[in-house]
Length: 376
Figure 1: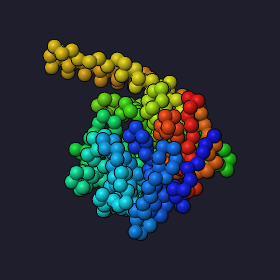
Figure 2: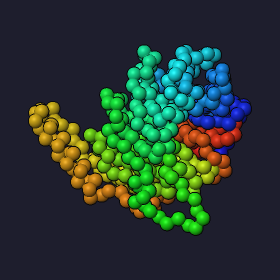
Figure 3: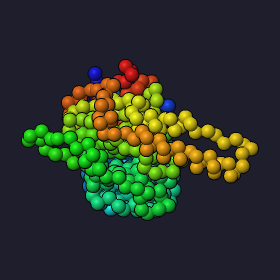
């Protein structure tokens, strides 16, 4: 059962994020350029109209290192805001996007911001200099999602409507690797029912688990596609599971439950679902790898450390070869909890509200909905 937050918007809410402060502040962005801050009990406390041209607020992102700093995209611009005084923007980062910005991500240090836009580019901004320092251009269509990897400040993942997931290292202008979601779909090759329309796996949302090595990507084919990389960032395993009967628009890992491999998804079918991926073969291999990893002894020589790393990499290669996750195995994944939201989902935001694990869900209405996860 959900409850709605009212009084904050008059147009459809497109996005939501929660700060990492102990007293959570929730930010939501809506069509027409409106931004609202809410207390953790759902009371609107501040509102601001960001765009003179009424551009939609397409994404909001808090700084992990400075929780009062909030970034909001509208059109090609990113507004930097201080949630303690929302009367006006601290600064306007203009022309961050070549075209309309779809997604934002702030690095763990709070030093960098990545923006994905309709041109297919990802632009990286130095927030101290307020300057674009890198343009990552490889997607052939709209870049719909981007996120920095935890514990790896120079690495980020992007996904787009070209059905590609890309892993980037910021010192380089080309991706370390590109993976086509069509490859997994073609291997799955399930027959279509008569009259059923084929949905290509356009990538809508990508997220990274707190370990930094497991990615989940929600796609238009209704599947969540999973990827696992090794410590040296090579792609080791991939899989998929059917999450929604229509396009999957959202996929976000949840960091505050019993383990870091809980995943929340939302879709065009109006379903919101919780998945426990801890026993999935792909995730299980990552957990095994972490449990085998040993800390080098203080007295060990540099040569021994190199040998240890080589052995570890060799073990990962053997692991990937003997226990790769097949489409059939991943397809048996079932949700641990699901909610029939009833409306096409725009955003899913995991949050701890009033001490309780929750999901904030936005749709075509002007009121965010909150679902309790107390039963998990």
